Length: 160
Image (cartoon, rainbow, N blue to C red; front, side):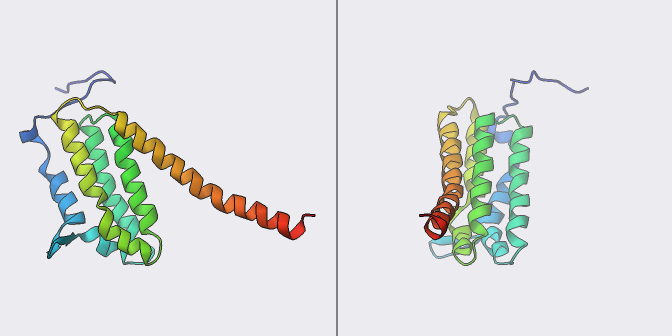
């Protein structure tokens, strides 16, 4: 018999019953191979596959976010997790620099930490919302730069 929770209720799991699959996926994607003090995972390696690797990494990372949503992680924390995946995917798609970024950023381990903190009990989501707002502002700024430069260039070329 299914149990239904109100829309604002969350299903907090005791730490011992948290899904170990999420931990395995995060470690596999971000820390599978240790090379001295540095660890790398499949996320960075998949990012080396042009045009396909970052998309595959994002799909695997999305599984962690979906599982967190099913387990009742607060919306602010889910938004921060989505922002982590978006940052990892978008910056990871930049040739050469993005490949290096994929090895450094470790979005899946960040999301694992957020998930585990949320499952331990109530968490202050103000920092999560702050991070999301900052990430959105950064994206808007980055989108505005080429527009402003394009307008400036058009004015310089065709203006008075």
